[in-house]
Amino acid sequence: MNGAKSLVETLLKSGVDTCFANPGTSEMHFVAALDQSPGMRCVLGLQENVVTGMADGYYRVSGKVACTLLHCGPGLANGMANLHNAYRARSGVVNIVGDQATYHRQYDAPLTAKTVAMAETVSQWVRSSSDSHKLGGDAAHAVAAALTTPGQIATLIVPSDTSWNEGGEVAAAVPVPQPPHVASAAIDAAARALEDNGGKTLILLSGKGALREGQALAARIASATGAHIMLDYTAPRVQRGEGALALERVPYATDRAVEVLGAYENIILVNANPPVAFFAYPDKPSIQYRPDAALLVLTQPDQNALEGLSRLADALDAPPVKLPSHGERAQVASGSPSPEKLAQTIAAVIPEHTIISDESVSYGRGFYAFSNAAPAHEWLHLVGGAIGDGLPIATGAAIGAGGEQRVVSIQADGAGMYSLQALWTQARERLPVTTIVISNRKYNILINEYKNVGAVPGETAMNMLSLADPDLDWVALANGLGVEAARAHDMETLADLMMASFRERKPFLIELIV
Image (cartoon, rainbow, N blue to C red; front, side, top):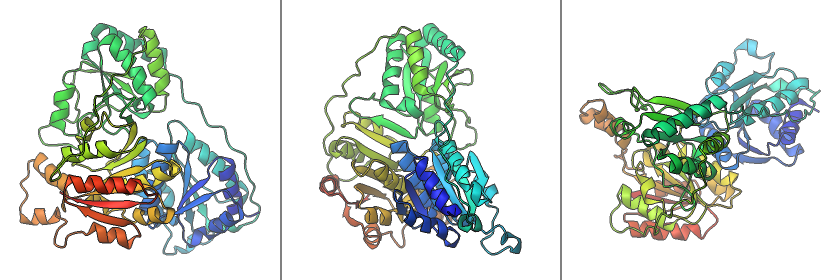
């Protein structure tokens, strides 16, 4: 058995049965081993940033770790933006990165790179495996690292001779470390704040706290104490609609966030980070909460939010509560597009258990209010701020859901151009993904940011922020990648196209001209 065969067999034995890949020469023995070891689903991405984004979306929906296959240091570099997003989302991913043969590195061939150093910037665990006898064991440890709560990026660098040399040994799965228990002191501090000043206390949810079970526990606490509940703006996965709370995220805009959070003297963090501005702005604060507010960490990101919320609810003797109804479902909007009308129309037509991949960027920040009464669905957000994750996340999410749930990808046109190759993978895998491209033909978020820093854009600056002359043709782009597509100028057409796409088990793209 060579090293590559032991690597594949160990991944399978450790529960990894999906590989998102863009292989090259140094990974050919791994590719050959996939033929010899049935059980691994291999999904080809046409660019590495698509590959890493798919692995992120897959983990967020399924809770299972997939591996990526990346070609040497430059392949890893191509995938780093979405590895950054996955790192910030705390997703579990095992990267298998090829490398020059150990004896060939001394010759400084063109693809030789500082791969370990690059991997360390977006990984919690990195190892370069130079012994085929140990490669299986290294792979088992990589999977255990990736599965460590709440999920980690593990990067295993495999020189090509480690793959082709004989002596590979299949390793048993390595036990995954259990998350640390929530400290009693954290429970007591949160309980005191709620008992003393519940009306001025915010419970900020992320991680598992943003899922239905976490929301129900938070609702018990809020009902008993008068506290308020919000979502971290960058919560990776939020369950919404019927059976969930009607929650809003902390606003993106600093002025609005400062205004909203100024009401709270205490903020209880549940798998969430303290709210801070995405960027610094002249004469504006970096933190969005009051400087005198008490930040109380109920659960760190590597702790179980459900344990912390449950123990806190019990400490407060908070009885179960029935979650309120959200009223009647929205109706399809009419006329020309607007952010409100788009949110309303999506809420009106999505089927139950839809997964929404949201890279609407600036256009969709107010979508939540219109979809509270929609059927049960979930929302996947751009967590790390590196645009280009929406289409890959949607693709990986569809695979993670086994192709059994409709995925709706809300995609800004500029961000979509970073990774539109994901559409080809959707077509090849026949995935039920409906993509709505918000086509305003400009980097609208950057125009807004220009204003936020107090600058006035002139002709040169506006040319840098425009996607016109020539206009992007998303229908032609999608067709060229094997995805059927159509264009909509009004909400009625959008709704008709969406509902028609839901009846087909294949991808479909709608370019919405706004």
